[in-house]
Amino acid sequence: MQLDNLYQEVILDHYKNPQHKKLNPTFDAQVHHINPSCGDEITLNVTLDAGLVKEVSWDGVGCSISQASASILTDLLIGKSLDRAQEISDAFMHLMQSKGTETGDAELLEDAVALAGVSQYPARIKCALLGWMAFKDASVQAIAKNS
Image 1 (cartoon, helix red, strand yellow):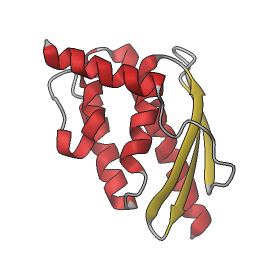
Image 2 (tube, rainbow, N blue to C red; image 1 turned 180 degrees about the vertical axis):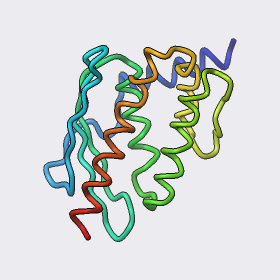
Image 3 (tube, rainbow, N blue to C red; image 1 turned 90 degrees about the horizontal axis):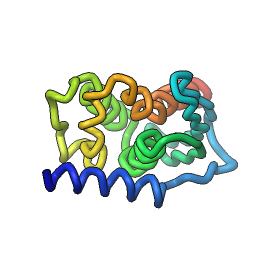
Image 4 (cartoon, rainbow, N blue to C red; image 1 turned 135 degrees about the vertical axis):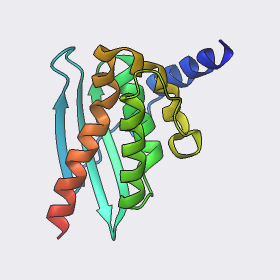
């Protein structure tokens, strides 16, 4: 039970003190995603540089899960190679599809493991994935732009 409380604190901390929640005016790609089932929204900017995720900035409105997840994403992916960012994104997607049977690789996912419990609630999985899907979309667009 103490671990669940710690995870709740991590989520609430990212929700109340979001990282990189201010759209950078310069970017390689910008996307806007909406979760139609609840109305959560995110606009996400990505800047790449020589195969690295140089910058991820965002703004959005929604529940604590969607907003905390976007904040966690930025902490995890900025400064990583695109391959490593993909590995982290895939691991998070796998965690969200686990229906509560997995806890996630804490070394790879860091604070994102706090969202493992969300995978037990199908309606909330889309909230947790909103920023991640936006990042995936934006990074594809940024790669195409820089090619």
